[in-house]
Image 1 (cartoon, rainbow, N blue to C red):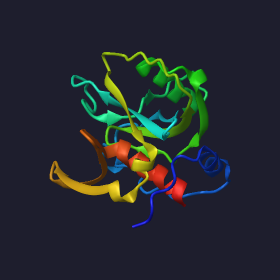
Image 2: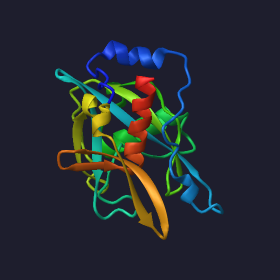
Image 3: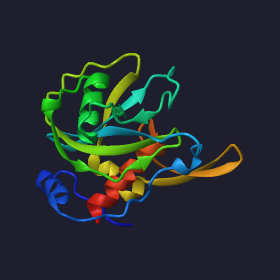
Image 4: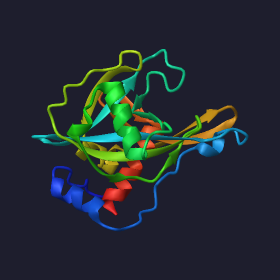
Amino acid sequence: MNSPVSASDELWLRSRFAESRTVKPVTSGDGHLWRSDREIRPAAVLVPLVRRESGLTVLFTRRTAHLNDHAGQISFPGGRSEPGDAGAAETALREAAEEIGLAPARVEVLGELHQYVTVTGYRVTPVIGLVTPPLELRLDEFEVAEVFEVPLEFLLDPANHQRNSVVHEGRVRHYYAIPYQRYYIWGATAGMLMNLYSFLKS
């Protein structure tokens, strides 16, 4: 197994996004399972890398149990693009402010990852943002049950990466997962994390 990438070096992180390079994503999603007669809609999520004294962490949300899509699952703050959004970064920052009260002024956008197409019909652009505390979050209680943070070093350690499968509607579906304590990070969120891992280690 490869050694985990050092996650505490902020300068290293900035340098990876400052470099001009193309990295093939680990996964582009499971959009092939989406009905071909329906439009795939643009969306964006913020991948918030929080500057903590012990090192960088990644902030996640746990969705409330009553939502139609991905109820109770672990996700990044984000959502569908609006016509007035100038780009993916604006969408991600707007949605993060609406969902968890994260002030855009606290976020320095470092870059974007390869788009990920979900089984629910969204073409998601992950926007990587460096977040400076204090966060002073205010959760949208309808959408967000809680927020929590995971050390980036843990998420970048290949020893913590899983590749699992499930049979859904007669078809075998493969997905990534990164369990952490009582949280099970899987599906699109884990897939985007795998792409972040690939981007940073390449």
